[in-house]
Length: 383
Image 1 (cartoon, rainbow, N blue to C red):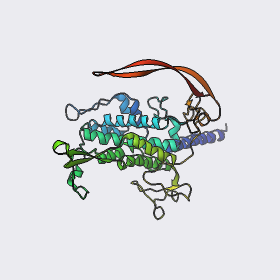
Image 2: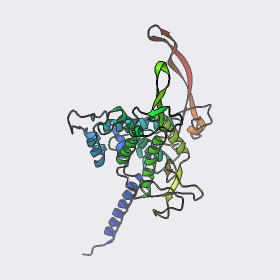
Image 3: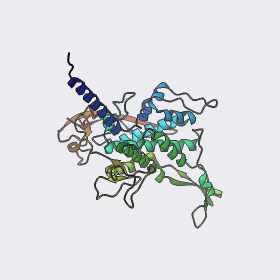
């Protein structure tokens, strides 16, 4: 009896193809995004321990974090609360920044074990770049603030400025107070957020660059705050310290970088040596602009590899909900306007009754009383 080799060859070819597709999908996705799910895992129990080494982590959190991230949590009691706060802060800011865009940073279809932002992060587009940057910035900001508040056992306020002389001619102020610990927040974010991103392919290089850009936007917006000291309210001497920016300021700046993001490629097919004047990052690789006429991206720029989908129509494969049913502004010609938001499909007008507080008055002491007013409003939604 003779056996044909054709079915076996075909089977081997199909297996090889499936492995290549799976490998390519994994490479395109990047490895360090699973931790975002901690924002939906409930309130953690990782406060300062009652006794040395006492740290408890819920099973859902344990499954969401990578091995190194779990070790960082165990070694830094109190840090998990700050990381979750940073993740939630980042998600909220992302949704505020994109509330009037076709892509609105939705996380409503999240299921545990899946990516928080859906399958859009499988695409190396601008939106993915913003997600990586804003979440990295959120962790940096939350850790730096938690250190100064005494919520993390392994760090404190930043006192390094206390050894410096004030840079003023009048010498009428001095360093003091409790500065937010941006150095520790920056370093911890690198260790925690970048876990799994080794820079072995172009997608991971993109992720690392955007993570770092998010951190730099927090650091560069640190501001000096001062308090006056003196008799009868005079300001004989001022004590000054460094304070984190409002996270909304960080979100605004990252949104500007999103609009001007650079499409990139690795110089000379992955060569670590860029042209003269190129700007390498801490991982010693240089991303070059896809268009040779554009300048190389700086450390605070966002970078992407491929064009974004239009987000107009529902695409379950990419987790895109489309804009059908989204509310739009009929009088706007911007991205929130009905023409752009609805992708020229048209829109519906509907009258609704809105109940709002009105005619509020202050009564001594100390109560505000309001009436409830009903008004008719017309809202417009995309078909």
